[in-house]
Length: 226
Image (tube, rainbow, N blue to C red; front, top):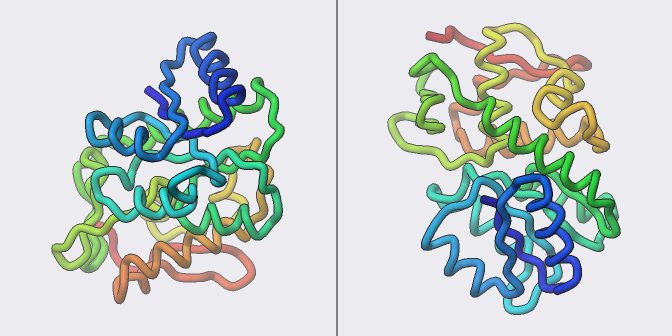
């Protein structure tokens, strides 16, 4: 199920129809209050979120979603008429998994939705636990602990950490990470990776030092992985 928070009736109905035509269930909401009521009742597989909304700004909604452990791992695609680099970076920095500026084609939108859903499904892992220093990762539960305390990560932050851990000390370039996590069809810049790495390190606190920068190349995990 996909939740779509969009106050423009025409866009909301068109997106709902386009998704349903592909066999993807979607429920649209015109107001944030309706959206929050639905979230409390049932979590979706993905959220599509406009920025300019009545009652509450879309970026504030995104930050609230990503700060709550119950909703933090639900992927979010921003839909907005704002297309400047600042707005895009702000959305990604706040935890969005993708960003599509209006006007957009339905074919592109559906492809981006499917890409995000596929990446989300790939986060499952047969290994029950990874441990690096005081950081513990539980792939099956989609959980990360630092010094025994749970850390709330966005989907992209979690995918970055897991990708680096799975590389087992090997350096991953920004292009490696961008293509592997955001997908080859992502039209953003490699700086997107740096933004998410910065947020990930911040959330890991003192343990953020396990993510090492290899100048001019990319990133790697430093320390023994068990």
